[in-house]
Structure formats: structure tokens, C-alpha cells
Length: 336
Image (cartoon, rainbow, N blue to C red; front, side, top):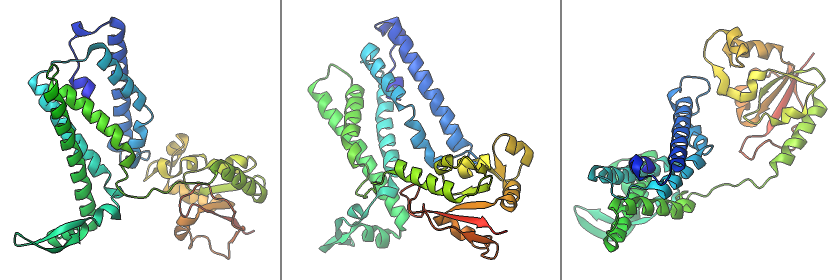
């Protein structure tokens, strides 16, 4: 975005090849951005929408944006942008910082919420201190989710304002370039420096298990208990990988993508042709399947269907396909 708003006139580019490279990188990046934004956000009523996946999608092609910025900066940076462009750069820094902070509200941990703040009443400071979360909760009648959003947004805004101050101090020392250039560079450097602390005090759980080996062992276990030519119904989560080790079983291909290809309504034949499915196909498959593989945290939705008089559970496998809580698999087979 900064490379676009500071895009220089054609005559200021050092070479035609640099200009063509910048255009190619910019078009590629923003076309991919729009495509993934539509797929994950605008198409929220389609089966393949995934709002929370959007930020992950961007990492697929983020290097294009970085290369675009580098090429534009090196080959033809606009060192004397108009005043309107500089105002736009300031606005973008503040808006982006606040938005980034807001997006991280789920990561606000106790370390921030329990920060001591002065107590006040009727404009007067009181002895001792109170927790930040208590001040906002009882003083402004806010719920915990609202408090987290407010705190994270404020921290993002503070980071943006800090970037403005740092850029201003750098610009005052050397006024040969415009303030917007100092702002963009200081903002990018600040983002790089602060990137390790974006968890905002929340502890991250890192999986220490060898998941490749776990999936191999899990697949071997499934292959040993599932009879040949069995029709398998999969509700074991996003990781369909273990079924790769069970080539003698039959599956319902649309379930490979779990619920991401599930539709409400629609023609079953048309959906199946495009490897999608709906409630009608789901009911048909449940009645036809011989083996059911259920993720442990989803088992509560299956209790009524998996009647012990009709289904028997295999011994639970020792391995799970992921480190997520409740990711263990439970396997049932239909009784004769």
C-alpha cells in the first residue's frame, strides 16, 4: 500500500525493466489479494468460505508484496510526494495500527488485563491501585470481550502514534526528504521489531509431538482394523492424512475437505459432481457407511446416532492427528 501511494511518475524510474517488474509484482499481489479476500470474506455464504483463514492466505504470496516494495523503493521512490499523499500516509499508519491491534484482541492475556492502574473517584486519585480489567468492567460497564477489543485497539493506536513521533524526530534531523518517507520507513522497522511480541502477553501452545510420525502410526492402526472394501464415513477433523494409509477402504471424496465443501440445500447430484455435499448426501452416507471415524470433540453430536446396539467402538488409537485438544479419533463399525 505504501509503495502504491508513493508511486513515482514514469519518467523517474531508473530503468524500464524495474518499472515492468514493479507493475508485474503489484498486479500479481493485488489480484491474488482480491481473489483470496473474495473467497474467504465476500463469499461467506458459500461452502468454501473461511473468514479466519484470510490472514493465513495472505502468507502464501506475501513475498510478492515485499519484493514490490523493495523494487519501488530502490528504483524510483517518490521522495517529494504531494501534501495530500503525506496526509494519506499518516492516516494509513494510524488506521492500520489500530486495526492490527483490534485483530489481536483474542490474544490479550492476563498480563495486560491485570496491569495496575490508579483508582479515581469524582476526579480525585484514591490510595492503592486497581486492575485495568476491573476499572473498565465496573467503571464503564464493559464485558470481557469488549475490554479485550478496547485494550488491543488502544495498544495498536499507541504503536501507530509512536511511529509518528519517531518519524517526526528523524525528519527534524534531516529535512532533505519528505516526512512521509521517514514515517513509512520507521513504521516498517517498528513492525519488524515488535513482531515477536504481537501475542500481547498470551502464552502460545507449541506442539512438541512429531506429527508426521503420529499420522503414520495412526494410519497404520486404521489400516489394521478397517476391513477391506469398507465404506468409511469421515468426521475426524481437517486432517484426512491418516486415511492415505488405508488404500483398501472406500471413502466419500467430498469429506476430504471436511465441512468446507458442505452446502445447505442444493441438488445432490450437482454438488457431488463438484466434490461438494449437503444434508441429503450426508444422510445417505450415514446409512450406507460401514465404519465411522469421529473426532473426539465432535462425539457429542454423534451419541444418539451411534447406538451401542448397532455400532461397536474399536480400541482407541494411541496417536492423534494433531496436537489440538479433542483431536483424538474414535472409530466405530456397524454391527452385522
